[in-house]
Image 1 (tube, rainbow, N blue to C red):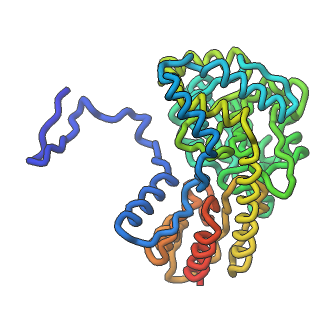
Image 2: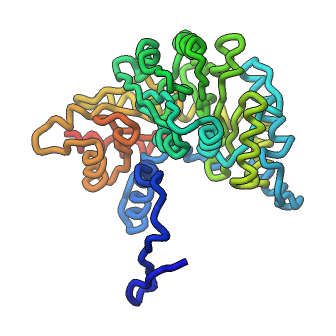
Image 3: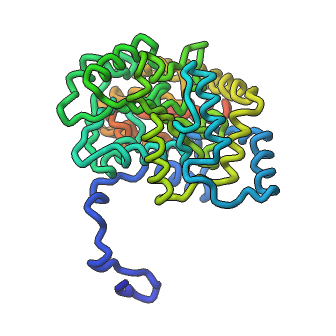
Length: 408
């Protein structure tokens, strides 16, 4: 490797042999993690920052799950595991999904990964050929488009409207389909909007996917965080035979406050699950062994913690909705799940002398009021901002007061 020294600092200047691959030219870093890093640096410098940027539950991982991880370490379960996950965890995932959805699946359909983001990477790498199109409704989670592009695919972004609660409309979905369309990527409950599709709305989308012979990736990572007694419908259950073209992506991160444990999974037809396991064997060998044993306890142990966290999030949702609706010019959709508010700031952006983009708005909010949020443009929706309400009521109250002051 030829590196050219640059001064006395020991830093290195990149030479031609280390030229970045063409695929990296369009790759955008995660806007949520970038904002969180900036807020963290300000906190470290002593600034009183209220961080509402990252989608991470503020609750500790429940004690019984932590004890299972500790027991796994004590028992020496710290070696390689099967690439697609230990059989006991795959069986626990299959049993949990079967019980909650009513659709019988087996462990052979489960591929455990290093988080739901890794599951999506596995799916796109396994399924997409160069130039294949993937329909993605906007606003969308920041990593969707980038992961599709890295696999050689083309994200086809279909705009939705706040007046329709940011839900993909059947006519818009059908109009976006071309001969190159391979699949649809859908998220309900949604990150970043918090909206939850009804069964009837999903059935209309499913019928079009079947007619057009498309695969559907259903990101259901927030499926147990729904409010007001709403139903969270798993996509493959909508029509007979739909499971043959559907892949469910889920994990323990949001439901059990286990973001750092890095355990996600897919539920798919067995041949696809096997292929993703083979891919993963060359990528990461296996998910973390200790985390897998903790995830078994999460799925099979007491579930009171899930209801407690969901109820706390609903109280916070109510607080955030009430306060945002009091702010002049601000609009929000019907937040039925997850822990995000995606609110409209287009009125503020139209004012003379003020910020003219959602990025500038968020940067000025952080600079002037020390509140970290994420620009809507990162999610494919300029003129909006995402704030997480995975924070204490006290922090949310203070953050919302600062946002109101900034808007004023």
